[in-house]
Image (cartoon, rainbow, N blue to C red; front, side, top):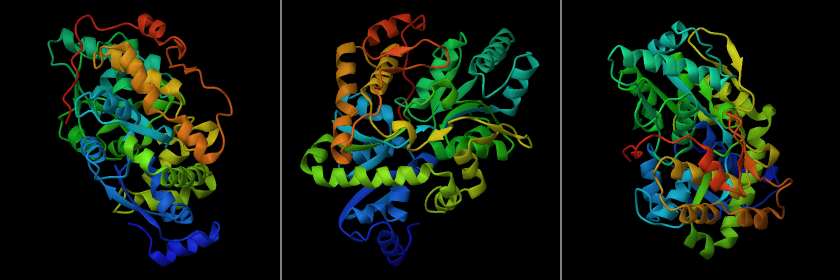
Length: 413
């Protein structure tokens, strides 16, 4: 848990001698590696230097985070990037304007399947490589078709929340391989800390979740890594800081100070020289509560895909700061909105695109830091090569294959 007050005071003095106590912000987080900038802002004194005292509250599920930010229990929260858009559209819950002034990271998720499914993928003769999502998706598709031919029940795959990068990455990857995510497999929601338990118990056959949980399934001998977000959707946003729009309007100075503290914390997290210290912080029982060695795999991008296997380099597996990672780009929000439309979660394109633009607030980021984007972000390109151009999201959506019938969103909680 947090360092002592004396330690924070000393840290604050080292980075500029700012105040060590001040406005108290209650901030919710989920135990994942990508909450690191929030924890580091507190632990290394970057928040204190801005006159902020972060009261960090660990939660188990994204539904809890959603409820507590919407109802005002939290001033700010570690959130899935699509959650803010969904909140503005009242999808699956109360309508509550939520905005993000800061992206915590790019990448950081991975798909793991059970060892039995992994064996079936290899028996089909396909390549299973983190570097080649198309080939690995094809191998999984063959295993799914073979199981259907034998009359077996569809595979059950878990993701963390209906409005999540994990849901959209998994669906995009499956669909590109010819697998209908609403017909050929069963998608369910499981909170991140329970993913390994669900795989161990045989309740699910695989999952898409943020670090460190995929690596923990490997070490437990129940899972094998087969794909990463960084390969499926390179340099795309994963977690953000979410605040209620009304809170941002009432407290512009606090929000700006929070953004500045997080900017310094994210830069610290991205520096390889700090990764051993960062792994030790994240590993604490009150934060992630997992071995630091497991956390280091995510920070270094050197992942073990199966128990006893050699480390495999996953380029840009998780990015905290470099390359303008933290600026909430409208282009990225619009891509997420196209996924809500593609999979039947949203029906009105104009409303979805308006909610996306309202959610990702680059203006708040720019105002706090006194800078804008180094290079204009106009879209992104998933692994299938079909580029998304934010100037024409309708054309991108029209070019994507859709399931043959109405898509059913999986259960919320």
